[in-house]
Image (spheres, rainbow, N blue to C red):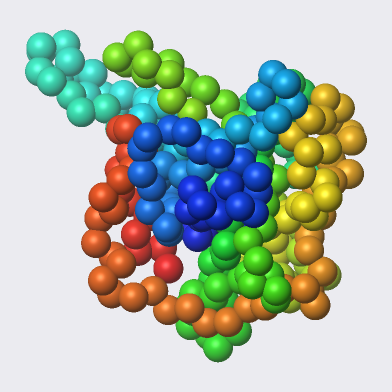
Length: 253
C-alpha cells in the first residue's frame, strides 16, 4: 500500500484541478501518515472546493486506546498517572473491494463522502533485488493526477473541527507495473482517476457507480524509477496536522 506521496501546491491545485484552496495553513510537499495535506470535494453547488486534512482516515489522536494491563490498572487504582497507548491502525489506504464492510469506512462509503487526493507521485517499496528500494511512480506525461479518496470530520478536544482522508487501492496481482512492488503475497496498487471522471466521482451518490470508477491506471501511461530518500528529508516536518506524530513514518522508506 502507498503510505507516502508528493502532493501539489496551491497554484497547481488551481491551475490543473480548477480548485481554490482558501485554508491558510501550509503543508509539506511530501506527505506521510497524519501530515496535513489538501484534498478536493464538491461544495453544496457541485463546485470543486479545496480542503485540508490529515493523511489517514483515523488520525493517531483518535485511535482507540489499548486495553489496560494489570499493572496499569493497579497504577490507576493507586492514583498514579498512566500514559495510555493507542492501538496500531494504518488507514492511509482503503481497500476498494471491501470498503463497504469495514468498520472505519462503511458509513462514509454508503454516504459517498468522496474526495480527490491531488498528487504528483506516489512511493512504493520494491524488493526485486532482495533488498528494500524506494521507488517513485508517476504519470509518464509528468502531469499531476487525482487519487480517488474518502474523507470525514472529527470534533477535537478544543471544540474545533478537523478533517482526515484516505485513498483507495485495488488488487494489482496482474498489473504489469504495480505487481512489482511490495513483498506481500497479494499485490496492491493505488487507484487513479481519469480527469474526465473527477466530477462524476465527487458527485456520486451511488456506491456501485463510484466503485466502477475505481481502476488501476494502464502501465504504459505510468513511469517508475528508484527514488532513494534523501537523508536531509528525514528531519521532522514543519507543518503537520494537529496532534500528529511527525516522526512516526519518516523511516518507512
